[in-house]
Image (cartoon, rainbow, N blue to C red; front, side, top):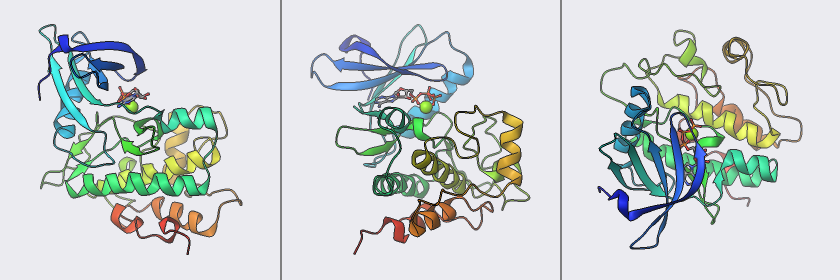
Length: 273
Ligand code: ATP
Ligand code: MG
């Protein structure tokens, strides 16, 4: 699956992330359009390790709801790049900004697709660990796929699950801060469900749940809210099924939280009869 950098023509930048840049590119011989994530050789060791980890995970996943991997290259300069399918509409974060909040029907469709991807990943012992609107990609058929495996983890038999991850994200679950109070961190899969619950909540109300509209997260305040406050509640416009679904994702005790496959059977996701 190695590709020749000379075969790739960069068209323009799609986005910047921690340490990497994602380009829209054309494969010269086939004229197929892809997305190429490049981490430059001069970026720090953490970023380079992350892009290799992402490549290792992507190359062994094959799900309609995980962004499709198409190859990689590594240049003598140290640049590492991952070629993946191009998702024309960008991320759920950009869609929220451009089109406004999502309806319950749209969110049920998003939830079904992301949960299908998470069911696949969790069955393959992969925890994503960074589910959030900017890491969920959308193509022109409105298919939603999980991307950005930079901080993901493959579970081993030992229970060291999440201890190695020192990153911080507003979408982190209570057990990540305080495993003793919230069901332990060995069930690392549950953290992805918490993050999905917050993501769907945000797409419904238009801003990050724990904070008033537009306020940027102050880390200490946010951590206190996640651990010590009740889970956020939806506005009165939300239907009982939607409310129950979000409630099942945002159970603070990770051992009680619903799994991805359980959530796929929740009434919110069933077609109306
Ligand atoms: P961050 O730290 O912000 O999460 P990152 O370095 O982990 O970023 P990605 O999230 O993978 O990198 O990608 C950065 C941006 O590039 C995305 O927010 C998105 O706008 C764009 N992007 C990534 N992958 C694709 C793709 N396959 N198709 C289209 N756009 C993409
Ligand atoms: Mg990202």
